[in-house]
Length: 255
Length: 282
Image (tube, each protein chain N blue to C red):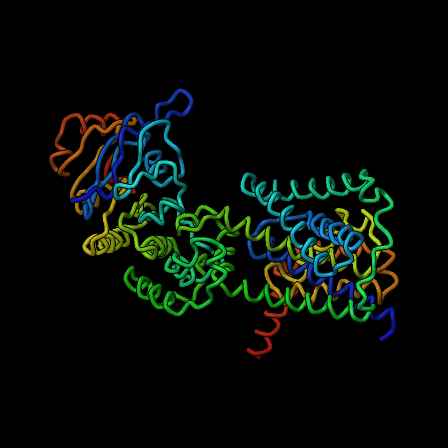
């Protein structure tokens, strides 16, 4: 299997803090990886590096064997990466449908000139409605995105990510702020996305749900990978266990 | 039509082009520009010099368009680096720089401006018709852009650049496009203004004028082409119709601006829409 996402010795320093310190791992096409670690482990920084929001001091980021280290977020999205934000960012003044349609039409928006030449939206409307159905948002198409409750906004965020036909989807705490029922429904949807062949990288505090769905766990602590492998084996590792307990994180109370 | 009517209609046409083109930048793409007068002026000076040099109307319009848009793209690059509120301040600076620069240039006529710009040969009514044709074309372009994927992406960039990037939209390219198109049209308006007056001075393109244009956009309803057209026509006619408004122009425009932002942030467009919805319901 080819690598959908590869990090090679990625490091970044903020002032006196080595936030990410030589992280390397490869995610195979079709894998379902959970990226976890105590608060301050460097997860968010690493996610921002993968998403193209931060440039690492050293190291490379590859998507499907293409080096995207120097590319901005938009270019990486066009390379097959999709991402959801920890704090939802829908276009509040647009309808739910339009939020997804804009993603579904990503081929038209590669540059302004091309975008200017295209007007028709029928195909994208249909595809967006279909995607909204997949994440359980049918019936909300005409509402303003800003009027949705948080649970539905999280789903909309996922729908937008799916609209750009990703090979790899990067989910930054897609369960944060959801109640138990909403969270397990959201996990179910993410599971279905994975079954359809999309590689999933999930950053999540809700360890219970992560253990349930991920096939592989990567554990970060102090900016380094301290565990990588089958979830139960990784969590049984004393080093990982210590980092978690030492980090003062109570697994089930979070999320 | 009397000579007076022809001149009023010409000014209305020019203001419509300016307000609609500013709406492309600030309304569609969310980039607040308070220096639109500078691009208008750049176009006017380019057209005036071309007319003096060659006498070709077509060439003058092209020169005005290119000068406006080149200057606009340069300022657009600033919009890639600064936040929206700083962009507003930056564009104010550009406007002052433009007027300050032109005032000191003897080849641009300095304080006295450029007079004796050769006539287009179309006559006043012909000029007015040409201005109106450009105004209609600008309105049509604005509607088209609004419906196209470009307008769609503009709205996304205007609302949240980061979120737009996650949909593969290169916000920088779209901001440059908005500035490039909007300021090209402002340049053309400047050219038409030079044809119309045959005499330009730096004062016509000052910051106060830019604020008046922004007032038209905001009062009309930021982002709404029709609202902005109606406001541009109305706010051009108002000082002509009411003497008091002419004497206290800044006071009236400033007051209207504050009232609209306070009471109806969506401007005339949203106001009309709400009235229409209410009428249909009852």
